[in-house]
Amino acid sequence: MANTVTPAPQPAPAAAQRRTSLSGLVEQLGGVSTLGPVVALAIAVIVFTLLSARFMTPGNLSAIVEQVMVVGTLAVGQTLIILTAGIDLSNGAIMVFSSILMAKLATLQGVPVPLAILIGLIAAAAVGAVNGGLVTRLKLPPFIVTLGMLNIVLSITLLYSHGASVVKLPAGLLFFGRFFELGSTRITYGSILMLLIFAVAWYALTQTAWGKHVYATGNNAEAARRSGIRVNSLLLLVYTIAGLIYGIAGLLLLGRVTVGDPLAGATSNLDSITAVVIGGTSLFGGRGSVINTLIGALIVGVLRNGLTLVGIDALYQTLATGILVILAVALDQLARSRAR
Amino acid sequence: MSEAKDSGAVSETTEKVTPAMEARGLVKRYGAVTAMDGADFELLPGEILAVIGDNGAGKSTLIKTLAGVVVPDEGEMRIDGEVVSFHTPMDARRLGIETVYQDLAVAEALDIASNLYLGRELRRPGPLGSVLRLLDKPKMRGEATKYMAELKIGIRSMTQAVETLSGGQRQGVAVARSSAWARKLVIMDEPTAALGVRESGMVLELISRIRERGMPVILISHNMPHVFEIADRIHIHRLGRRVAVVTPKSHTMPEVVAIMTGAMAA
Image 1 (cartoon, rainbow over the protein chains, first blue to last red):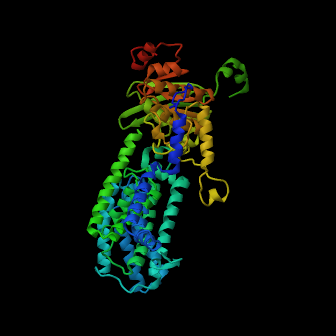
Image 2: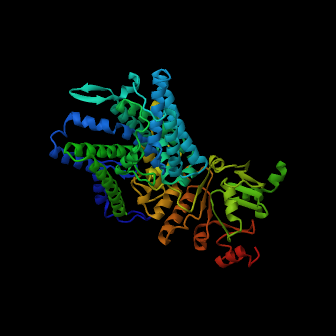
Image 3: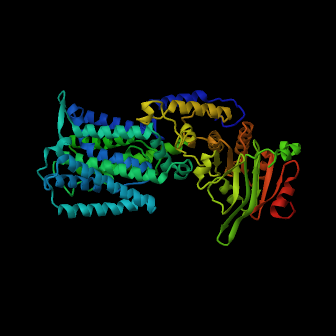
C-alpha cells in the first residue's frame, strides 16, 4: 500500500500495525520468523512434560543442552555457510579431524595441551579456508567442494590415526565435558561455550556490517558486489570461521566422549543441516538466523530425549526427526506463499 | 588560454558551462570489433540526459565506460572539467558516480534501510562502533526514513523487507540509494524496463525529483515516450559514436528514431 507517489487514502494502517505488533512479539530475524520453531519447541516441551514426569526437571533440561552442544556448535558454522547460499558436508569430518589431531598431539606426541588445542583449531580453520578458496577461486559449487573435502579429511583422519581411538586423554582436553553445579543442576562448560558461540555469531550477524554483508551475499551476490562488498573475501572468511567453529566442536566432542574416536560424527554433517533447516533458515541463502538454528537444535534434542524418556526405541527417534525436517520446510513454504 | 580571449567572448563563456561530465574521442576495441569509435559525451549540470541508440550502437559500452566497468583504449574523460580515469566501478563511485541497473540490484530479503546503506553502513560512535563494530541502526533508519520521504516514495517502514514491496517501489529503493550516495551524477540503465506502466510513471517522477535536487542524471532507455517525457536533452548514439544531441522540443519522436537508425542524417 501507499505505493504511489501521489498521496492516496490509506485504509489499512491499523491492520498493518496490528500485524507488526503481533509479529513483534517474536522477532523477525534475518527475514525468517522465529515464531514457527518456537511454537514447535513449546509444543514438544509441553507434550513431553505431560507424558513424562522426569522431562521437566533441571537436570534433564541441562542434559538436553549437553546432548546438543556438539551438533549445535557445528550448526553455527553450518548456518553461516548456508546463509551465504552454500552448504557444508565436510563439517563433521573437519570436527573429527581436529579432535584426533588435538588428542594425538597431546597424548602421543607430548605436545602441551594448550598448544595441541591451538594447532587443532588452526588446522580446522585451514581446512575451512581451503573449502572457501575452492568455492571462490575455482567457482566450484559448495556442495561438490565439501563433498570432496568430506572424503579427503575423513581419509586423512583415518590414515593419521591408523583407524584407532586415542585414549587416556589429558584432563585439559576434557575440560568442556566437565561441569559445575548450579543449585542441584549440572551445567557442563561445553554447554556454556556453545551458547557463547551462538551469542557471538548472533551479534556478528545481526549487529555488524559484516553480518549484513553475509545476508546480502547469500540473498543476491550480484547486488552485494555492486554495493562494493568484496564477495569473494567475505566468502573465504566465512568458510574459514566456520572451520574454526568446527575445530571448537572437535574440542567439545573430546569433552563429551572422552576419547579421540576417528569414526565419530559420521552423520554430524547431516545433523547440523537438520538443525539449521528445522530452525527455518533457508537453504537458498540470505534468510535465517543462528537463534533459529539454536531452537532447531533444541527441537531435535528435546525430541530425542523425550522419546527416550517415554520409552520409544531410538530407531523411531530418527524417523521422527526425518518427518520433522520435511514438515518444517513444508510449513515454511506454506507460510511464504500465503505472505505473497 | 589568454584572458583577453576569454573576456572577448563574453557571450560564449556564459553559455559554455563546465559539463558535469564529458568525454572526448573514446575508443574501445574488442579484437576486430570496434565498440566505440571516437565517441564524445557531454552531461550538463542539473540535467537529465537521455542516451539512446539502436542495439549494437555501442551505447552500453559508452555507459559502462562512464561507470568504470569498461576501460577505454583511447580518449579522455572529465568530471567538472578535471581529467579522470577509472579502472574499476569502485573508482567511478569514489568520484561520485552511482549507477542504477535495470535488473533491480537490491538484496530482496534485507530491509530498506539495510539496502540503502549496504556497503556503507554507519557504526555507533565511540568504542561501541570502533571496537565492537556495532551498527547504528536507529540512525540509519532515521536517515533512510527522512530521505525516502524527501523523494516522496510512499514507504513508511524502513524495516520492511524489500521483497514485500512492489516492483516500482523496489526500483524506487535502488534509485533512492544511488541518488543518496552520488555526489556528481547518477547513471540509470533502463530503470523502467522491468516495470509496468504505472510503476514506470512513479520511477520517472522520482528521476525528475532527483534532477530538482540538482543532481544530473544519465538515463539510458529504449522507451521513447519516457525519454521525451523527462529528458532535457537526448544523446543519440550510432555506430560507436555520438551522432547528434537533440532536445524533445527541437525534434519529434519519429525524427529521433530516424536519426538513431540512420534513416535520417543528424
